Amino acid sequence: MRCLTLLVVSILYAAPVAAQSISQKAEGAMRRVFGAECEQRVVKLDIPTEVIEHVQKRSGEAVGTKAIVHESLKNGNIIGYGIVDDVRGKAQPITYITLFKPDGEIVDVEVLVYREPYGGEIQYESFRKQFRGKRSTSKLHVGSDIQNIAGATISSKAITTGAKKIAVLFDELLKEKKL
Image (cartoon, rainbow, N blue to C red; front, side, top):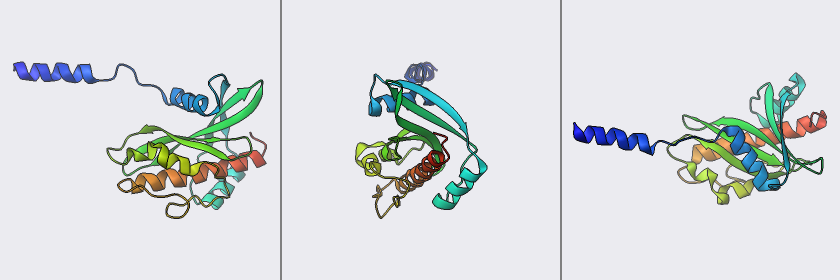
């Protein structure tokens, strides 16, 4: 009985005290990429039906009716955007943010919450840097312009198709003057 009690105590002490929220992690990614001194703003957008249809046609992926868009401002001017999304990993959702310059160029893709036991290598700089400089018109396909990670095939493909979808969404929102 004594060992069992010690085990329970160890588990309780090992639990994290407070987890960072997805919004806080997204803001951290925005500050890392666009500058700690930038003002941060979060906008919740309703995505018009015609934009949803265009994104689905261009990316081949389903799109929700709302988007959470993070904006980084310097001297009152928007210098960067980030859109938070979820994709399906092997069994769990992967929450990530795709960061853009105002012209639609991808600056980075950062995983905010990775819930799978394997494949977390998609969070590494060596994988993420492959997205930099890409746009909605880029192929963004594992095996051609994005290299797969052995042991993280499903996660690699999920983030790549997600980034393509979000890049197309960003492009369509710009065309519709929603950003």
